[in-house]
Amino acid sequence: MNLLEVRDLTMQFGGLIAVDRFGLTLNEGEIVGLIGPNGAGKTTVFNCLTGMYAPSSGEIHLSGKRVDGLRPCQITQLGMARTFQNIRLFKELTVFDNIRIAFHYQVKYSLTSAVLRLPQYGTEESAVRAKTEELLDIFGLYAKRNEVASSLPYGEQRQLEIARALAANPRILLLDEPAAGMNPHETEELTKLIQWVKDRFELTVFLIEHDMRLVMGLCHRILVLDYGITIAEGTPAEIQGNRVVVEAYLGEEAL
Image (cartoon, rainbow, N blue to C red; front, side):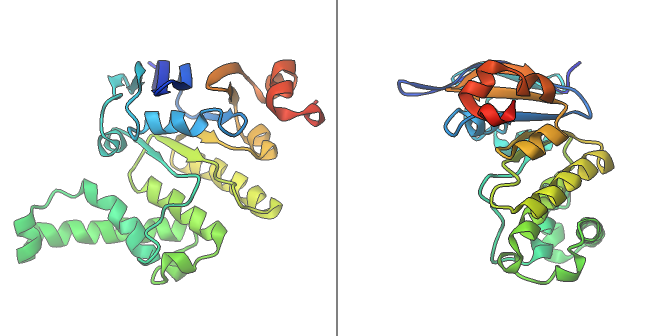
């Protein structure tokens, strides 16, 4: 059974077909890339997978369960979390609270327990604090835990967003242009981080990215979208050698 299976996913906005019969399978431990020109429909695919859009047609199965039509929070709880092209942190909250909040859907204490500070509340809050501190330590952000998130350098904000997504304990991590706005050195460090996170947390990663050095060096497979249609799928070497892809997106220098 595939970890994620997408069948004939179509998203239509009025007369515009943004995604046309998109198909995808993800297996455990893979890193798969989705590339294509701006406006090709890549982020629309992500929005459909994570419940932000209800697809016009098609099916999405996560660990064998059909999830198209579910709310984003339900899909997250079933094991798929994401980051965004434009970083969406709680910028006025601390680094610590940005991650702590992400753990709270997992707590089971009642409102009464919280108000009266009953033992279950204390036990679970202590566990959340410990898990939050562990993630901050893993990502090298523990020393900045009390700083406001907006004060972090761009690269660290991106790390914090990835750490927050991991707090949801996903099996699949979706990264929407994680290298956007980064310089070459930051992109190189990000590439290492994604590989390390995938191995450390035993994840499957599906990413959108325009930086071809990152994509070609990291992904096991790549899908190419153009005007909402998948025009190619294959290994990095196969994609680089595909004339249709080169003409639509990569450019002659990729050959």
